[in-house]
Image 1 (cartoon, helix red, strand yellow):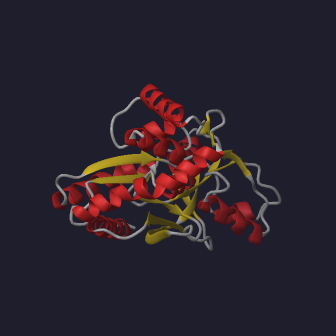
Image 2: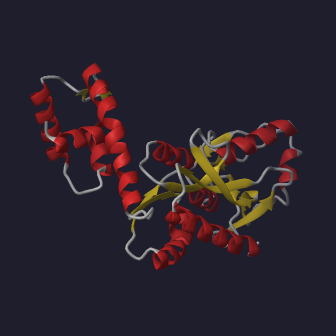
Image 3: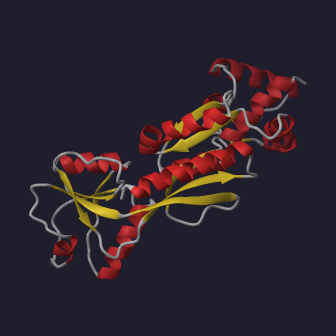
Length: 293
C-alpha cells in the first residue's frame, strides 16, 4: 500500500474534500494529482472511500481514516519534539485589521527569536477562525471572543475595547440616549452578523433597555461597518480601536452601560516556546494599544 496515497487520503478526509485538502497539505501539490492518487488508492483497495458531492466518507473510508488518523495527526508534534520543541511553521488566523495593522510588528519580533520560521496567515471572521482552529488548519487565532472557548481551546484575553455607535458627522444625534428615548428608531442599523459576539451583546442590551432596533445591514467586518456609515447607509455598531483612524465624515457616540468587546488569542494543545514568545509579544502590543486610549 502506497503510504503517500494514504497521506493524501488523510488530508482529504480531515478537511472534507479534495480542494480543502490541497489548501492544507504542507507542500505543493495540485488538485488533479490528489484526485488521481486517491483514486489509485481506491482501486488498490477495491472500495470507494468517499462520496465526492456532497462530500461524505463511506463506511470503508471511515474505517481507514480511523486507523491512519493517529499516525498522521501526530507526525507534526513528533517532529517538533525532535526539533527541541520549536515549531518551524506557524499558522495564524486573524481579522483583516489585526493582519494589516498589528501582526507585522509581532512577526518582526518573533522572527528575531525564531529566524528560520515559516508563517502562514489566514483571514476570517470570528466564527470562521474558530472553525479553522477546531479543524487544526491554524495554530492560533486572534479574534473577537463572545463566549467561552470551545472544549480543548485555550483563551488569553488581550484587550477589552468599548463598543460604540458610529454616525455621520452631519447627524443631529448628540448621544445614544437620544435614540433610546424615541418611540421608534427609523435609521438603519449596520452591525456585524447577529451571531457574532459584539452584535449579540449589543442586541441583548437593547432588549434589556426595552429598545426595539434590529439590523438592516449585516457587515462582515468593522471596516465595512465604518465604510457603510461613511456612505450614509445608516448608524453602525463598532468596536473602537484607538490606534485606528475613522473615515473623515464619521464620529463616535459612546454606549454607556454596554459590555466591552474582548479580543483574545485562542489556541489548542500544549504550549511551545514559539507560542509562549508570540503570546508575550501580543500582550505587549495590547498594552501599547491600551495606553493610547
